[in-house]
Length: 456
Image 1 (cartoon, rainbow, N blue to C red):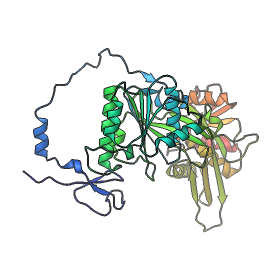
Image 2: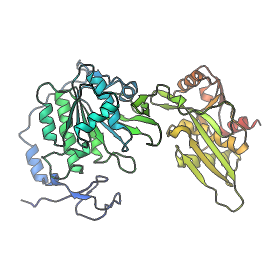
Image 3: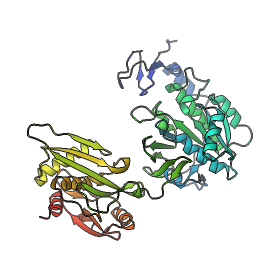
Image 4: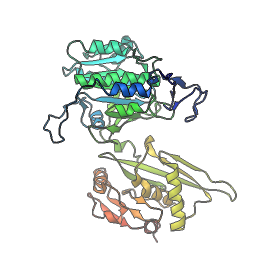
C-alpha cells in the first residue's frame, strides 16, 4: 500500500502545502504551518470506502408540503433584526468580533431573556470559569436568570451532557477556538480542530433541534480566525463591529440562510450592558443648527433599514510643488480617487493642488455605492466654500462618464429623511418619482449637479 502523504495547513489562512515551511507562501505569516492529521487517507482508500456500506437517503420533492422551522425571539429587537426574526431551531450561528467588543455580553443578555421565558438555555465557556460568567451576569442585572453555565473545552463532554434528557433550545459556545475534539490530533484552535469541533456541534444542532451559537475570534485584519470553511458550514454569520473606545456597536449579518443579508442591529455600550438603539440616524448626525461647508447628509441603506449619516470633506490648498495628501475614514479610498478624477475630467474642478480629507461621522463605514453623489457634493462644497442646504439629503451613483445613475430604494431613503425633518433631496433624474415626502431635484450628469451647487 502506498505511503500516506502528509500535508500541512496554515493556521492563519487555511492554505495547504505538501511540505513544511517556516513562512506561508499565501499569507506570509511565520510558523503557522501545522501537519493535518486527518489527511492520511489515500484516494484508493477513499474510493473503496465510498463505493459500499452506505445507506439510502430519502429524497423529497421541491414542492413537498412540510412545516417550516420555528423561530425563537431573543427579546432583543436589534439582534432579531440582524438574524431575520430570531434564532431558527436546529440552526448554527457564528458571531465574530474584536476582543472586548461585547460578543459575550450580548449573548449573555440574549440567553437570559430567552431563559426567563421558560426555555432551556446552556452557556458553555471555554475561556472563563463559570464563576466569572456569573459575576458578569450580576453586573448586568441578570444574576437570577435560569441560564445553565459550564466551563468546558471537550466537545465530547459537552455533547454527552447536552444529550441527556431534553436538549436545550439554545446552546452558546464561547468560543469555538477553545474547543477540542478527541477524534482529531492537534491543539485547540488549529484548523483541523476548529473544523472537527464545529462539525460535531452543527450535527448535534441539526439532529436535536437546538439553536447553536459559536463565538469566533478574529484575526488582525478583521476576518474570523480558523478555516474559511467554517463560515460555509454554519447557517448564519454575524460580525460585531465597532471600536472599544467608542460607545456604539453595529451587528451586521454577513450570511443568513434564513433571512436577508446586510441587515444591521445597532447597540450602545453602557455600564449595564448593551442597549438597543432604535433610531440609528440620530447617532451619525451632528447638530445642524447652521450650514457648514463640506458637510452633507446621505441616506444610506443597510438591508431594509435606512440610516442617515453625515459625510464630511475638507480641502486645503498647498504651495506649488508639494505633494497633496488624501486621507479617508469610513469610505473606500479607491472610490474617493475615482470621484476626484471624474470631478476634474468631467466638471473642470481642480483638486491636484489640494489636500483632501474625507470622514464619515460617528465611526460608521459606508459601502453603499449611492454615497458617490453625497461625497462629490461634500468635496465641491469644501472646495468652493459654499455650504449644502441643511435641509437637503443627497444620494446617487456616479459613473466614470459623469452620468448620475439611479440607486435602489430611493423612496425608502427619502421617507426616512422626511421623518427626521429634511425637506428636499438631490438625486438622479431617473428617481424624480421617489419623493417619499420630499421635494426632489433630479440630475442626469455630474456636471449639472455641480452647476446647481455652484449656482451657475
